[in-house]
Length: 396
Image 1 (cartoon, rainbow, N blue to C red):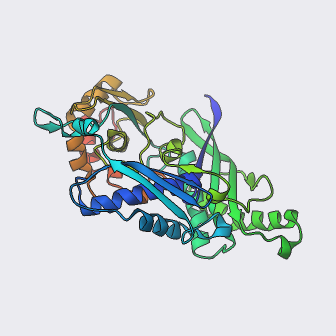
Image 2 (image 1 turned 60 degrees about the horizontal axis):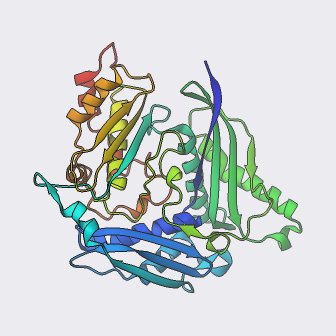
Image 3 (image 1 turned 180 degrees about the vertical axis):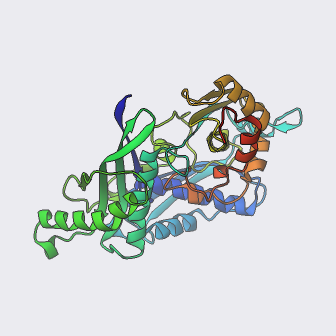
């Protein structure tokens, strides 16, 4: 039996890269709310005092007020004062969005036997395991709940000295595929400058440590049924006053491992935010997660990774691969047969099945695209049927 540590990280909605994801998805939602057939590939960059939005859009009817969307999103996140790293009402917004290339549009508009083709080539991965009730890897699930809690106590004003930027990192000890203990938690939390009140950075650091431990770390760890060591590092440099876009430029799609499984399970390389569901980078990854989660929920395996691959303009996937890491009650070849026979894999069918032509994407921009029940790809509506049809060997 092998023991090892696995570590995953998450970032708050105020992290500069996540600010960009939120803006890109807010623009996408705005356009989809006006025209569900809008094709959008929107990218955002933030830096000190400036937001740049670029990308391609095809929409027959509808218009996005980019500056208003940007400023509203910054306000919602909490960038309301320049001392926080950005002020929503002072920021300069530059938009260079242009019309989608007709050549790219052919990939979606082209019909293969009357069906919508994939919007691009690429491969996507979906993953699920039985480590948590959400069927997510435990390190990333805990890490997300920690950053989510940082935002909650800031917005609820329980810790009104917190600022929007922040990170978490969680190390979990495993025996083979079973998590047995949380060994280490790291938090980086942007805060107001309290040096005048506490007289030294050391005293400020001790105050912040105890408050973050009490209001953020312990409440989250106690939600998970696993022992933990009280080995916590909070603001390891001793000071985190300057943060947000003032301290670090941000880009859409630069946190793809945070967005997915925290490094446990592979990634096809395509980012999600700012892309409408005709882009299989997004819809294919959501479908792969849906498939993996339903197979694990059906107890056909304890751990599953699904790979889908597509070619631009073609509806059928180029390949389907299933890896159960030796935990399946049937062979991986049989699991692949089940995937092909039980799940819809063509882009248009995925979009219909998961009801993706809706303005639901801004909610995905922080705290994980997976492991939150509010999203349709997290449903396990096929698990009972799969269990009844395929589960053998005494699995109930």
